[in-house]
Image 1 (spheres, rainbow, N blue to C red):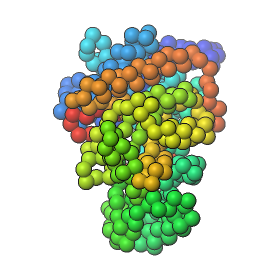
Image 2 (cartoon, one colour):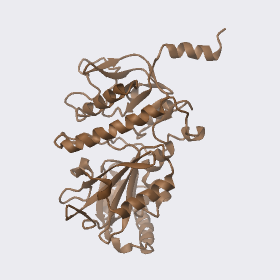
Image 3 (cartoon, rainbow, N blue to C red):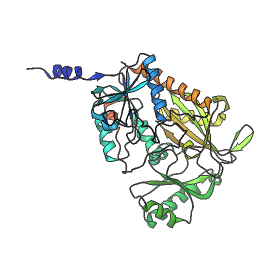
Length: 401
């Protein structure tokens, strides 16, 4: 009779072992298990995600260059802790479907638990203590939930209140709570009489709206259009004159990217004319700047937050606004910064590829290293969220992950 340990060894011998598995949302990426002759790349030709092939082709090539064995898969393919039923490789300048089991103890995950199916896949993927995510689960949970972010980092953040449900009573109650916070805020004159309503678990500037405080019926109508989505409200910060770029005042947010407890990259995103959202996905213009070009007060505030978080092993971003009065606010954090570049801007391609190389270098150092995450934190990777059917779809000509 074989021991449990030897049985496990036999099982693992039938699985291709990788140093890292990249797991990307199957709302854009296709499974390598697909039998369709039309599916020749992870992101199908002619789809909104087609241009993402460029990002992960480069990612896998850099992994291989650094002797890192890596594969690309989706939540659909997850069959167990660290295991998938099929995966994509990029070899000899071509994408290859491999319909065999793969396994890795290190997961570079690019998907969020936005519905029950994906939530179940995520729970299964990290169901073993041996399998670890690239980013710390505490930060993943913290930044995925905007209300939780505010609760932890309220000293640095824009006042935030959750609307319980899509009723007029709940909206009024949330507005009253927000007004009470604003009245005692030390910089209450930074706020206009407008309200920003956001998907509590959203990203990419999608489902972000601006209302007058008396437009409660419009807010309720919008919420009722999809009651599975949870919303938070914040006062609108007047910031169109808070930051200057090339001697011109612009409505912009400032992003600082951290890894290893240090700032590794910085850029600004400038809102298009007539919009307050700075996301590239909403037409904003991304411009890389040096750390020295970031206002020192922003760097100081950002480092204070990094010290509070104290998760040096993680890759994450902190986004800031500067009010017209010169006060600094944390807009949000993110553990899945885009590995993206605008196809028409060479500088952005150079910087985005630089970030990928930095990430791969970190992956190399982690292979074979001891797990630095407590067992109880591994099991808390999956969090309870309302079920939604949304996922950012990018306009043509723009890469984002």
